Image (cartoon, rainbow, N blue to C red; front, side, top):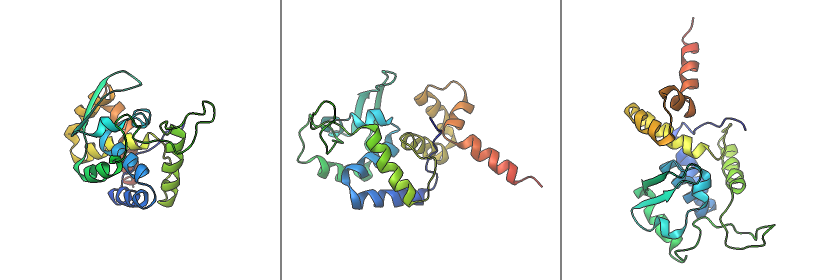
Length: 186
């Protein structure tokens, strides 16, 4: 699996929000919840309407079974409420529009392949490379760190990293630091 990068430029993030907003409220909210929560795509896909009705989302992460709690960012609350207004509490928040090929089931969540496709289509519009499903999680972490480097300890805890270098590398900062250092050479 190739290494993906965070989206580093806030202008690109804003542009991608607009891009998704125009095309699909579902994809817009998927993108926004991803960059405001740090959830893995597998956990994003499994969210249900009931999970987002309060101020916070509580869930058990699929990968490591850790309990996770995060606040729903106020900038998307109104859009989220509009989006779920006609949905049942038990509905998946990000439903697939198609009948599943093998099981023939309807009303199932989108899968990571669908998320990958729409994220990459948008990324191409903005000239981004090395983008994948994990980009949303890395973007969240990158933004938290850049907002305040003291958040490093929080990020290490969130990701289960024991070494700050591992977290900095994960969010793409080690490469950024190396690039800057090389560019300063005479």
